[in-house]
Length: 124
Image (cartoon, rainbow, N blue to C red; front, side, top):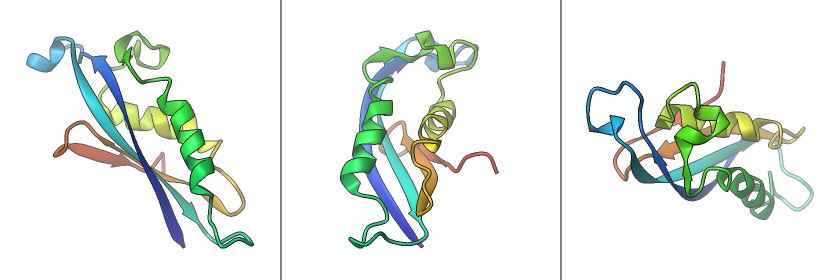
């Protein structure tokens, strides 16, 4: 097995509805995101997935979040744009595009700060 990852980031504003503290107020983050694809075997060039292809697909989805008020997006109108929900959103948006007989989306890691983040592996 090969785990192939790309790192990216996006800036966005949000607030957490009903949060008992400062995060209930609008604020922003520079989220760091790692997307990992797991390949079962390599192509004839010796790649699980080309980094260029992986980056292009990931960045197309990340661009839908970048420099946005996340609370105003349809995906977060009825649930808080927490790091957990952002990771789930990204996973769901990427899953079909990163499915192939050779590889599949394995995980999405979202770092809200340099020291706080999580990894989502999809619905098991």
